[in-house]
Amino acid sequence: MRFVTLVAALALAVPASATVKWTPDYSASSLGFKGSFGQNTVDGTFSKYTAEVLFDKGNLAGSKIKVVVDTGSVKSTTSPDNYNEETTTALPGAGWLNVAKFPQATFETTSITAKGGDNFEAKGNLTVVGQTQEVVLPFTVKIDGTTATATGKTTVNRMKFGIKGDKPLFALPKPVPHEVEISFTLKAKK
Image (cartoon, rainbow, N blue to C red; front, side, top):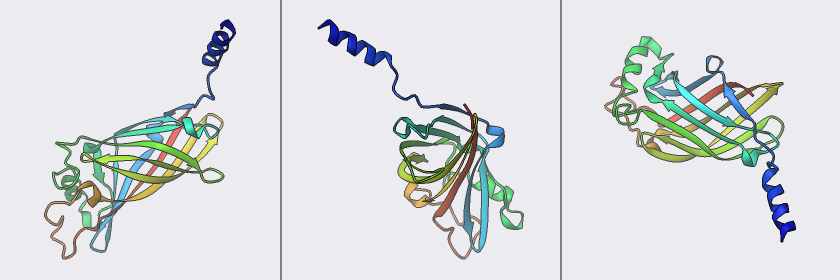
C-alpha cells in the first residue's frame, strides 16, 4: 500500500509537459476587422483588449487562448469619403455592437490543432452582443527565441450574432453585407 501511495505522490509531483505562458506586447499587436458597404471597404480596429495566451507547439492539448475585447474601443480607420467619424459613431450603437449593453466581446479556444509548419487552427467560442458562436481561426506562429508573433484571420457572419444594424448606415441602396473579416497580429514574450 505504501508503494502505491508513493507512486501516486510522485506522479502528482511531476508536472505534465508545461504549457508556456506568453505576455502580449499590445503596442506591437493589433486587432481589426474588415467589412463593406456598397462597393466600398470599411476597415476598423479595437484599441483595447487583453489576451491570455498559454501556447506550446509541443503541447497543443494544454494550450489555451482567451481574448477579451473592449467593444467601446472600436474605431473605423479607412471608410471611404471621410465617413470614419460617422462609422465610428454608428458601430457602438444598439443595432451594431450595442456597447452600452455589451461592453465586451470574447474569444476562447476549445481546441488548437497543428496544420503543418508554423500553421495552426483554433476552434473556439466567439461571443459578441451576448450571442456565442463557434468559429474556426487559422493562424500562424513564428517563434524567435523568447518572442512569438502570431497572425490570423477568419470571416464571420454578423447576422448569426444578431447584429442586424439599424437603418442603413449611410442610406445606401444596398444593405451592408453580412460577412465580416476579423484579423489580428499578436506579439508576445515568454
